[in-house]
Length: 155
Ligand code: ZN
Image (cartoon, rainbow, N blue to C red; front, side, top):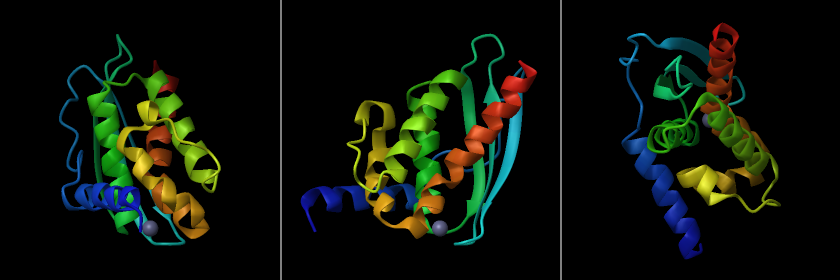
């Protein structure tokens, strides 16, 4: 195992131990909100992921989620919530990040991920080599994508 692999595993472990964004949506005042349930039948992972968006600026004020499943799926949702929070993403920016993440995770290691776009999510790059785990890693991101579509339809 390389030092980098070890570092990546630590990131994933850290997020699965202390998940970010887990809990209820609280920033709902004068916000556009959406909730989506996503299920991954191949592993049994489930998530309910909610967002609150500022209708003026299009900025995602909060990502909140509840879920259960393997450590990859839960860590990935936590990393996603952190990314949206720390980079104060708008709906459009979040779409770009989801696209970059999907590209990385479906590339089977053939694409060098953009760390500026993906932050801690680059730690999940190794998952792309395991076809069965791709859906685990994508779970929260697919749910966010569905929430964004709901919000966009009402803006
Ligand atoms: Zn899973």
